[in-house]
Structure formats: structure tokens, C-alpha cells
Image (cartoon, rainbow, N blue to C red; front, side, top):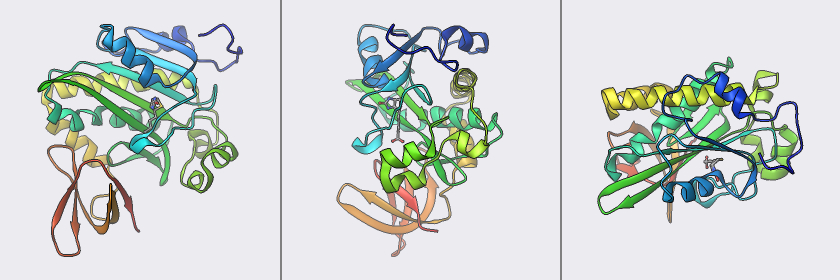
Length: 273
Ligand code: BTN
């Protein structure tokens, strides 16, 4: 923690997290900062300097938190969860999309331990009662046809006040919420962090033992889009269709009005009903 960070009752604490940690790999090295630009950016530097698999960067706030599709991620101090985990899986870049599902599965499981029904919207948005409460920004470093490392950046709105979300996000704030709003009580951030890390470790073990198909099965169980009418926005194209679900590569497949199946790789898919 940086010395200028104010002491708060509910501050993140490596000691409190460790007490609740059963994970073997994830979190074996933890860095905790008061303020960073982005936990992903900090971890990228550590990864380049040779940091080990499982290294975790946590922060109380981010000044340049990033979301998917170049969006920014609202990261106020001392209320939420901003974390990045370094993984060095022995997979090729093509397997990375399915691999990144370990993060949303772990977030959804951690949220469920707080009594809330978490679901996933492709690729890795976390929703509770249709409100977005968290998301994952996966970054890959590739050397030739080899995956050097993966950074899984995870943000979850734990205790941020709804009025702060509305002030920061404008209209989009109506589609977002914090777990505190939904649970009606404060969320213990150290307990949430440990729970997320423990589930992430478990899902990584599932992946190692059973492969991508096991992740896909679990992910499909929590998916809210399949079978629904959706709107797809990709770079310059927008179309409506019916969501057929995620394929074996982790891409989302949508059938357009002419019955043609489109594989969505990097776009945004949103339900129309
Ligand atoms: C999204 O839904 O768009 C993904 C949001 C990911 C935000 C997290 S917060 C921790 C990590 N650091 C970042 O800059 N982004 C991710």
C-alpha cells in the first residue's frame, strides 16, 4: 500500500486475504497498491521482468482503468475490486478466448457465495439481476505462435454507491450496479478477493485436468444470451439476430435474419428482450 493512502476500516489487506486463501498458484505473490494507472499495466511490466504465474496486482483505485473495446473502467478509491492475475498457460493463442472464461467463472462463483445469482454475458461480463456488476479485460502476449503470458484483469463493483456510478457513467450507469446495492449490505472486499482467487485456482485446475470443454460447459450454464434475440455491434457492422451460443473456440455465434451464422470475435452483443 502506498504511504499516502488513507487508512480505512475496510482497506484491502494482504494479511486478511492470505488468511482466507486456499489457492495454490493464484496469489502466491501479491502486490497491493493504493493507486495505479491500471492493474493490467502494472502487471504487464512485472510479466516482462519475469514475474511468476499466479502473480496478482491489486489496487484500491485506478486512474486509467480500462475496459473492453477501448472503454474506460470507473475505479474509485477504497470501495471496489480491481485486480490483475498473471498466467502462463501452455496453450496456443487460439485457445486463449476459452481460457479467459476461467476469470468470469471465478467472479460469478465468488458473487454467488455472497448470496447473489450471478450470470455471464459473452465474453466475460458479469451480471446480477440483468445489471452489470463486473467485467474482465484479458490481455495476451504472443511470441510467434506461442502464448507468452495472459493477464486477466478483473473489475467488480462491490460497494460503490449508485449515485457515484450514475455520475461517472451517465445513462450507462442505469445498466450497472454494485453488489452492495443488490445484496443490501456491505461486501467484505478481503473476503471477496480471497474467494475470487480460490475459485480462479479451482477453475485453472479444472482446465488443466479436463481441458477447454469443461470450461465451456460451465460457462454455458451461466450464459444469459443463448436463445435470445440480440443486437451485435462489430467495428463497422451492426445487425440483429438470434444467439446460438458460444462455440468451441470461445467465440459467440449469432444467426442473422437470413439464417446465416456469424462468429462474433471482438464485438458487443446485447439482448433485445
Ligand atoms: C469490461 O467489462 O469492459 C472489462 C473491465 C475490466 C476492468 C478491470 S479493473 C482491473 C483491470 N485493470 C484494468 O485497467 N482493467 C481491468
